[in-house]
Amino acid sequence: MHIEHAGTLERLRVGAGKSIAAPVGDAVGLRDIVPGDGWSPLWTGLARVGGLLPPARQPDIDPWALLRGRGDPSGRGGPHGRLVGEAGERSLAVRPYFDTLVPPQGYRWWYIDALSDDERYGLTIIGFLGSVFSPYYKKSGRNIPLDHSCLNIALYGRKGARWVMTERGVSDTIQQRDMLNIGPSAMRWDKDRLIIDIEERDIRLGIPWRRRVKGQIILHPEMLNHRAFTLDPKGRHHWQAIAPRARIEVKMDAPDIAWKGSGYLDSNHGSEPIENGFKSWHWSRAHVAKQVAVIYEGTRRDGSEFASALRFDASGTPQEDELPLVAPLPLTWWGMSRQTRADRGHASVIKTWEDSPFYARTAVAARMYGEPVTAIQESISLNRLVNPVIQFMLPYKMPRET
Image (cartoon, rainbow, N blue to C red):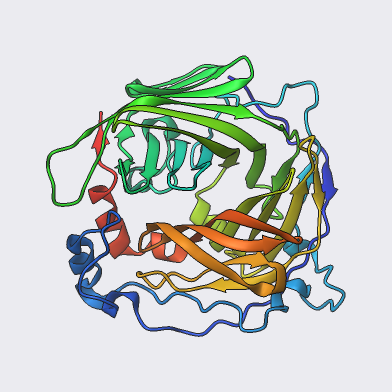
């Protein structure tokens, strides 16, 4: 097994501060039907049981709030407001290592997103070991992470939209240095590219017939980054943008679609459940001319907040940068708060890719650092994730097969 070294720690200065929170109307009373992006009326009925969905937080009223450090008007903040850069293990090539040990209670995932050159199609793929969203993993006590693995595939576009998130057991999960097999699908590193071979069945709520999802996706990194970052002061949660910028080829047999576009690859891992470390976060990335900007901010479980803007240059080297202004986005159908960062604090929704009770993923139009960009943004509420009603709903979107 490949075991990573934490390395020495290098402090990265970023701004952080308090958000002004106010309750909003409960998401369960917003509409009577769910839009046609994967969440059927069944979800609505389940969510209304007991009115248990917690309210989402309002976006920051003061756009400068997250730029001010806790108790420090200079914006430097205290240690709780900083991401921490880990000294990279430069003797290791920058690439995914699929044989990395995942400890009990822990998790690891590899995340890919991409947008077609004509912006008509998009996708996200996440390979999970110790799936952080799995109700089965949570219920099991989280002692065997590899018994709760899945390949989450989401294809977006008017043609060929699909959703896959079938959980597999330990006997269907094979870790090798260059390859991760999860059921009939696999992620593999071949020389200098990542190949995802897909053989799955999709899931639609209320429809028992599951359509075949088969094809191959190839990601060609255009830059590689050796630096990882710690997301919490105790060093239990980590993130690395492996390939902040990439080209991607999508060749699907089922559905019959093919396209090329721009992409991104990162990885997160942790030694405790993700909800133990965080209440919520907002993340976004954008290709800015020949560079890449990543915004990562949120609220930890202890109430401290973090916010960071990183710019990856053409070689993939990250540098801290000034945080752009908070750009609030409209609440989702489920009442999820979401935001990004942008010049003058303004951004607009192109398309909401995922709209769930606890998670939203959005394609956003904005200007960052003087350049017009299409950003991919995500918001997650871990408080909502652990709600008993949400835990009851999750198996309808992520079945388990062993």
